[in-house]
Image (cartoon, rainbow, N blue to C red):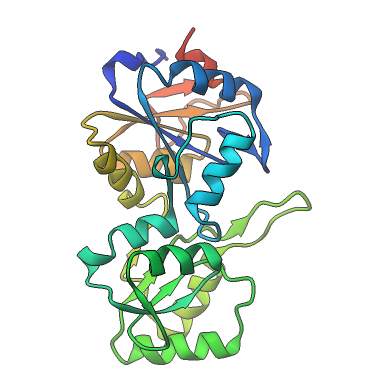
Length: 251
């Protein structure tokens, strides 16, 4: 399989967890590559994580050794939902989520209340009361919006339920799927990042077939799968490229 030629692209969209760091621990080869190629191509960082504000993620990226990253280079499922809120007609929202989602929506001018539409992300204090409010509102006609549908969230001590578990509980009670899901493998976040940079030919790099690669395919973008183990032939969805390190982009 050929290696990507960066001169063919005008934006590099990088998944964060698994490409830039693993459980918050930096991948040194990725840091070297990112800091080397930033003068050749614009770089956007994307994550399905809705619990943290992109400002905090940018701060962490700077702390681990990417000093030039700004808030505008980072796209989370929460910031993307906030970024398309005017197109969706959002004005007031009942939010099931954590600080990152709450702050992003407030900064976009969304009034947070128990009125309006229902925005759902990972919420580790999710309970029956929140479920009941969300279900009543959705059954009464409110829009049902979700940051992402990741079933599990990896942690150093093992996987725990992700935002998808919260979304699924609400969906089961309402017998209705979300009207909009922002996070990968849906193409919305990739398209939003590309539009923000004015890019016409982005390349997506991720380590997840069913999130990054499928999302890139749905967005009509080329993709590269970053792997650390042996690649088995016939993988689907199929990336255009396979990398064992981001440094292959510069070698």
